[in-house]
Image 1: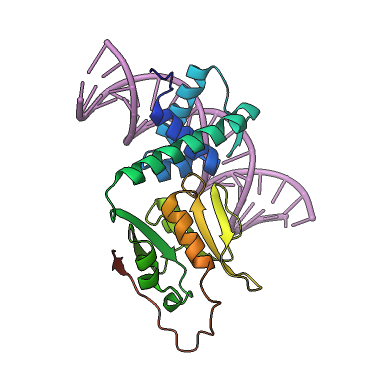
Image 2: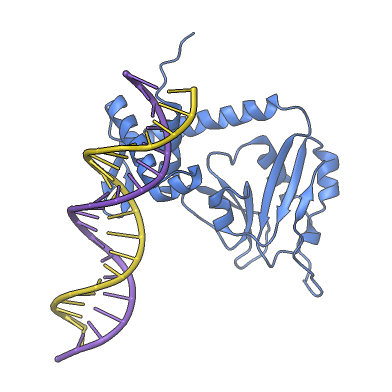
Length: 208
DNA sequence: GTCCAAACAAGTAAAGACGT
DNA sequence: ACGTCTTTACTTGTTTGGAC
């Protein structure tokens, strides 16, 4: 069977630009220059014969066609990511988790997680913020008070009041099995305790 | 508070380099 | 030859800081 597909690089550029609503941020994520992203998107629009973005000054807006196109493309990349992760031998999936500086890492019983999800390795990076997530240094981020961010899915992981802790993941990968498992496990954790003698700054790899 | 100029930021287009 | 990317010059709107 032959699929009539646009260039996948162009689709990647479109998907990233649509999530960030910025060629610059998309370029950052894809490790190319904004010019390259702009050209890829432009080429895609020319090929499809459909305008996907409204270019305003210092602002990108998805056209109706772009809004209609994005979910399918994102889902497609998610399927590819899922298929790839299932293809790998057990134990080779590594989830890199960024954690804000004031989070008590002792809350995370990683040994328990590994015993339940032997196929997922977890590596923690603290301190980490949106910068690390956008740069791709971490796959997901536990952030303080980040209830929304364009192109990212933000989900509350504690039930307390105030700013709270949020799990932030790129829209394109937020439903990957390892992130879904990690999110569910986080939510099942007991509530946070007072941080009397907290001693942060663990950075290091943990593999199952 | 308003005006203005300079600096800054974001995107576009064209030319050319590079790898296959 | 082709696809992809970088570099450079350029345009345009926003921000900032100083003068009035």
